[in-house]
Amino acid sequence: MLIIVTGVSGTGKTTIGKGLSNHFNLPFFDADNFHPPENIEKMSNGFPLDDKDRLPWLQALANQLKESEKSSGAVLACSALKQSYRDILQVNDQVKWIHLEGDRDLIWERMLARKNHYMKASMLDSQIATWEEPDFGLKLSIANAPEKMIEEAIAYIHK
Image 1 (cartoon, helix red, strand yellow):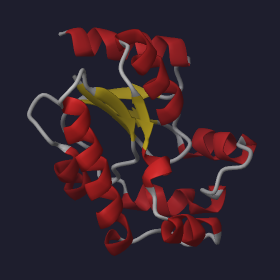
Image 2 (tube, helix red, strand yellow; image 1 turned 180 degrees about the vertical axis):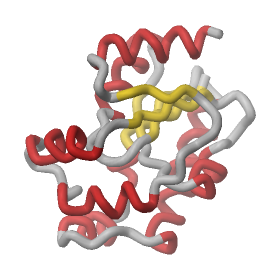
Image 3 (cartoon, rainbow, N blue to C red; image 1 turned 90 degrees about the vertical axis):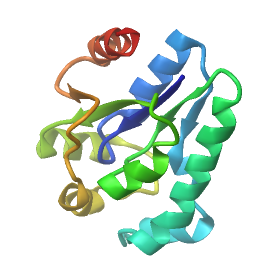
Image 4 (cartoon, helix red, strand yellow; image 1 turned 45 degrees about the horizontal axis):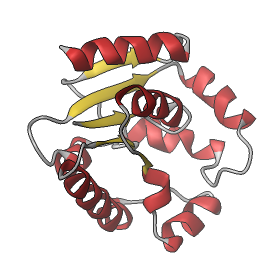
């Protein structure tokens, strides 16, 4: 089973992804940990990534998903802002997609509260501008409590 939790930075992908990972007893991968040093440096300096920056990162994530598919599967937390990025991550037709969506001001507040994260809150607007709303998978509102969101996602995955 492969589950991908998407959304702009600050929506709670890691929290929801880890909750699903625990429930389904699957390894959890945070896409942030797959960025090459150049991408992290660029974002740390407040510059958004472009498609050229993202391509090797997305390919590494797809490779991890394919490798995980050989065993029990995995849960991946990844922004996957554009459909073209999701196409790369769609390594089979069984991938379960969970998309986290919410109000910009709520996301902004969450990002400002984060400590020691290279993704600067000032970059939120560029992520929102890049976000292409998917027309598949489960869409969850981040206005809900994480526990409720995880419950909804579990019910969706069990369908």
